[in-house]
Image 1 (cartoon, rainbow, N blue to C red):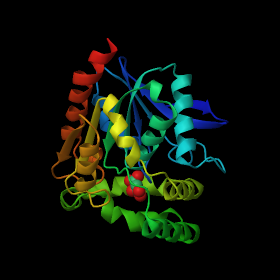
Image 2: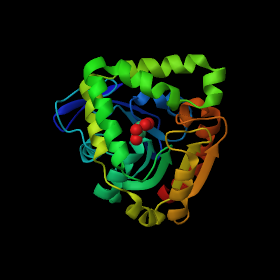
Image 3: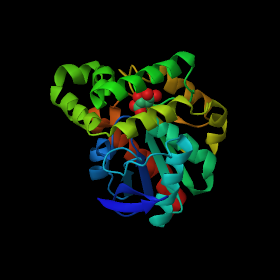
Length: 269
Ligand code: MLT
């Protein structure tokens, strides 16, 4: 792990391999370790995974928690690592960050991967649920998020067959500092609607991946995104929930690898 000084704070970044670069952005309330399998197995590519501010091993500043703030951190990481064309891959909240990156620095992006995410902003009920969760985090800490989210993060097949994965995800959630949790909840609550952006994404190779058993961002949302993006490829992953890249890495990593081999390597050589 490298620590990079970015926008006045210290971010934890892992940077392995050589080749065209893929930057992996984790979801909420997780950290870069969710990409463990992809970091290990995407040979032929430079793999960069970061902990967003306030999460994982990154510093926990008092502010800067917004999609634009997270995206500005990604941009500075690209600058520090001297990367000028990258594939951005975001899972769930990481996807919201990728949408913001597409708005802020499209010229640095060579391809887009959206996993278990959605383009819509929070509706009124969603925003109220964020407020309720923020209150719970204030009174009960990360435990409140773990209890509320764990049953929904993993698909029913994983929950039934691999209880150790629930323990791993629980540890990740409990390791997230309270200000980072609250910051991310506030940021998600006010994020922009990215649906108007989707037709413009046709200028990039786009892969959309969703767990068949995802109940947080169900496959229909991914189908709608794929239909709105000219040329996008959609893959629905059997026996996976919201954490498809963790739950079914032996399916998702080859999908990602094939997408990169077909679209990105060709573009960059
Ligand atoms: C995530 O997995 O990043 C979150 O569940 C996304 C959300 O709550 O909107």
